[in-house]
Length: 189
Image 1: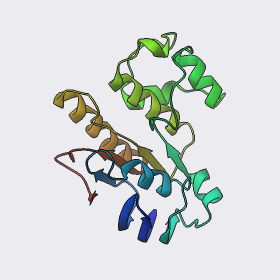
Image 2 (image 1 turned 135 degrees about the vertical axis):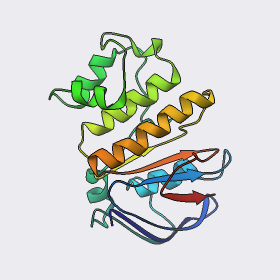
Image 3 (image 1 turned 45 degrees about the vertical axis):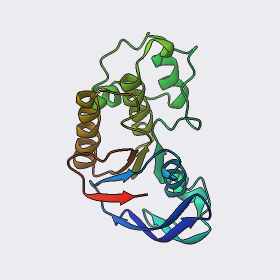
Image 4 (image 1 turned 180 degrees about the vertical axis):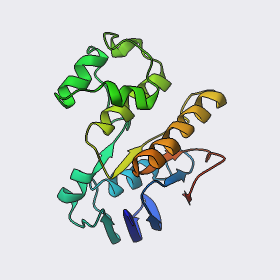
């Protein structure tokens, strides 16, 4: 198992959650705004300490070690993109190695010289996932996948996340208001 969470909770933020997710799986975390979806993702990424429960990610239990194997894609308020930078500047800032493969994997079809301020929400999510891929993580966590997008664009993002997990053997955890039609695990908050 890549993720083993048992009885995780954050008092007053999200209720007790248990989850086991293996390589190549897609886990949807669904719930209304304010239900604790983002906080749960941050806990699974080793960036928030739970009030109760245990967490192991790729065999690691210490938050610092978990952060090294879990990559956050676009998480509003945490991994915000700098609107003044270009796509290329974001990618180079993150890692100096070639990034074209990460962009291609995500279906990001915008020139890398494009300023981030010109990207729509779907393009921003795809760029966030490409940035996460550069870390070669065991787990990718993406927040608010269905925020402000038409259904066909949301389906395209879910297809991307499901395919990434399957192709790379990466566990993917993504939050949403409404879960996708296909997933391996569903956590409802």
